[in-house]
Length: 258
Ligand SMILES: [Zn+2]
Image 1: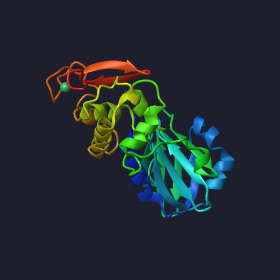
Image 2: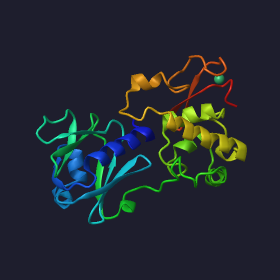
Image 3: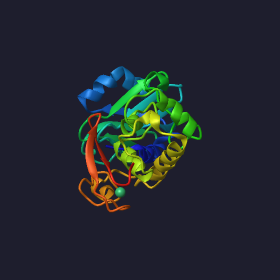
């Protein structure tokens, strides 16, 4: 599943490919997307200039020259493939946007769960999102305030996009390991010093992320705890454990995360 660094990378790729260009052709190739982006919406997209592509959480917002926006979410396996209009169609192509210089951007998605939504205003379709991890407004005090209202453990709280936008299952586990915080710790019990460590850890793990197309086999070797059940903790020699919290696997080291 693409996490924030991969979505950031994808938004950069898309921006470089089509920002400043006019959409000359839209093709929707999968029934699920055809429901979300019917012919009337495809017609409204055609002829518009893509002014900018902005990432917000794990959403990508394509701002169009008439004030509307196309909002993309990759879900499990979506990604952009950039090519030329005369090239063979991508495998798993679900939608294609062609622009005025002959570039074709394809939404390629084996599981076909990615979404494209045309919105008069992106706020109409974006959920309520907390600050971005690198946003200066994310401070120990602001994080304490948003966690104060919550019951439950810190790990599921970090996955709530209203707390911090874009933190997913892998980076939540890695950040808690780095900050030496037990993922089962009640979210609202964390004090300022631990929250400061946690914010620094989230920023550090996201900075070190691969930020490319998600190659699970390459990435796994980089993790300290994620997907390392039963293996040795790089920091303390303890054994990495897997538990399930709110239906998601959590990996952590019981010896050095307290
Ligand atoms: Zn350890």
